[in-house]
Image 1 (cartoon, rainbow, N blue to C red):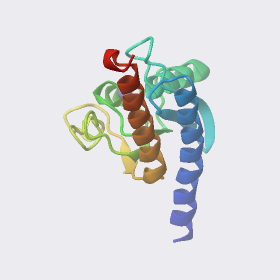
Image 2 (cartoon, helix red, strand yellow):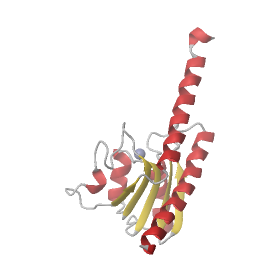
Image 3 (spheres, rainbow, N blue to C red):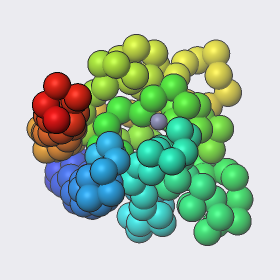
Image 4 (tube, rainbow, N blue to C red):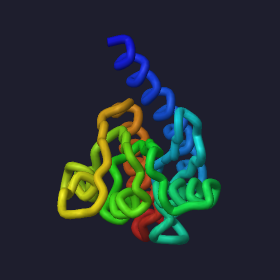
Length: 165
Ligand SMILES: [Zn+2]
């Protein structure tokens, strides 16, 4: 039992770091998603969304690329990916391609989630790799960041509309 407790508090520790990355994206005006690649309890890479200028620059993709560069290999078997929001189909595909062993995410994404919500790409037995998945780690904190970002953006769009000027 002690082992299980240690593991779950470890997940929360890394998710908190992913949340600080997500907060960094908000400061740039980007969607608040943060991701980390962890290997043997050590953070290899961290990133947040930068998709305002590049539609493929999701936090997970950026973190996976940095980790692969650092290790000098595409094969990240043994690594864990922490991300504040459930990965989309593109990022779930990248998890399979990079052979990441374990995925931990905060809140689900009802509009694009591909790790259990709309699709389950990372556990699809037809593909040649599958991840162990844990969801719901610091779920409220992760979801709150998204909700407040989108409601603020809606307010700003409303205030910028021509009728208001
Ligand atoms: Zn994505």
